Amino acid sequence: MLARRQFLMGAAPALLLASRAADAQDKPTIRFVLDWKWEGEHAQFTVPLTDGTFSKLGIDVKLDRGAGSGDTVAKVGSGAYDMGLADTMTMVRFNAANPDRKLISVCVVQDSSATGVVALKARGINAPKDLEGKKIYAPVADAGRQIFPVFAKANDIDLSKVNWNTVTGDLRDSMLAKREADAVTCNTVTTLMNLKAVKFPESELSVLYFVRHGVDICGSSIVTTQAFAEKNPDAIKKFVTGLVHGLNVMIDDRNKSMASLKTFDPLLNDDIEKGRIDKMLKAVTPAFNIAIPSATDVYTDKYLPSAADRTVHFWKLPA
Image (cartoon, rainbow, N blue to C red; front, side, top):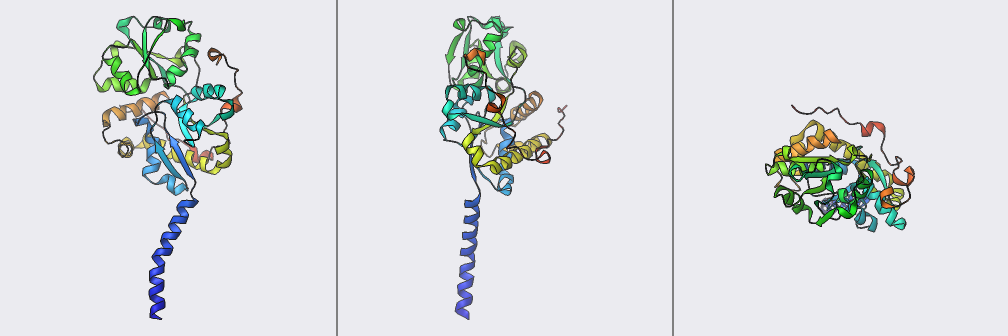
């Protein structure tokens, strides 16, 4: 009897560990890549990971920073990641160039794009046409650079007169701050807050939002492949449910949001990133010579959770 009891006592922890291992294996894994490096608006993704919401929902999320929407869609399209956050128009352009690897948006994160141009007023840039003959700095994968031809077409900008300078994302805004660049294409929230961090006067900047200059596009989306979506519909719905939870935490408690975000990058400046959160919450094809895609080729709502699971809290701009 003693031997049996000792056996059972020894077996219990092993069985428990085996059970937990089995539970972990049963949870579908989502490898997710963001559109950019860690910033305030990404707290909606980190919160459900750090507070255990994704795990409670039954999914195992692996979250990595990104290097631009163009890079994100390429990585998801290649299968390196299952899902990602990317500018929707950048996804459309990727699909046109890669018909055998088309992506689909399963959730629109921003219904209005913050993509645009931030320029120096001192260089005489106050309107889109003023960009002709100017030096514009941006990474190749930057969403603003990717869809600049659409903006150019809408505003009669001669693309042959635009002088592009390719730099990394980390250098782009510093080049503008040093006045070596005349302008940059960017997520305007990102660049404006980066310039604020180095005390660059916003009064000296001209901000040309694409959506205010003839480019009526939505912002970022959750993108994935058709194959992954069809194979993992429940996992995607759970991911979006967790994302809504993360967004509501951002709305209700910016301190908690920042604490979550800083587990991924402890060097983030709280005031700058909280300001970025506020700006994000407040904001929120002919040019490529491609056929206009049908709406169903770009977006589907079949992977969204129930209305109750995607209800967003009311948000008021802090005084």
